[in-house]
Amino acid sequence: KKFQRELRKKKIDVALLVNLKDICSGVFYFSCVDVEGVYLIIPKKGKAILYSVPMQYEMVKKQSGVKVVKLKRGFLKSGKLKGRIGVNKEVLSVKVFDKLKKDIRKNVKSVSFADVSGIFGDLRKIKTKKEIFYVKKACKIVDKIFMKLKRRFSKFKTEIDVVEFIEREVKKASCELA
Image (cartoon, rainbow, N blue to C red; front, top):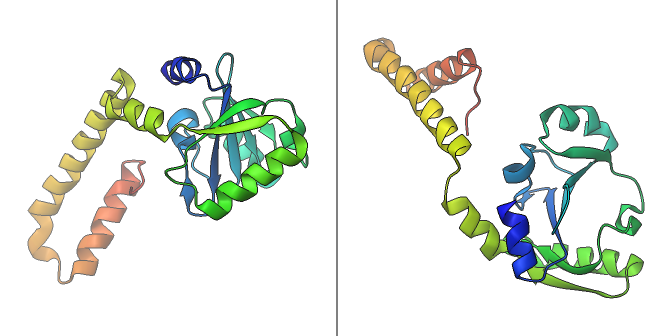
């Protein structure tokens, strides 16, 4: 809602965030999905839609906190992208941004683009109650793992033994390494 409020304030009609190879433009922050080949469209008003490649659709649907739709050819023609489109230029290469612009302009003639990386950066600086909860939970888990590590440290012979121990404990805690 804060992001959408900022979009309206800056007269941006819709934000388009993408997760492509080595490009993570903020999709995870809004949808809890961290896979390649997804496009998140956030209108200035209304519900966000996450477009997923068909192969990953079921997994993405389970993970996502927003509506998920199968990505189909011509999704850029859907009418969701029009007016002033915000993109996270901070993470998009010039090549990717130019291709995105070209593909969008093929389908929608009167569009302009704006950078939302500043809005996105400002939002991420201030943690929500939910984010604070998860950070505290993560700290407790890490603390437990390191206390175990400290107690058993003399038994490890190599750095690899330490790494393997940490990885095992992280898995036992139903977590994953960042």
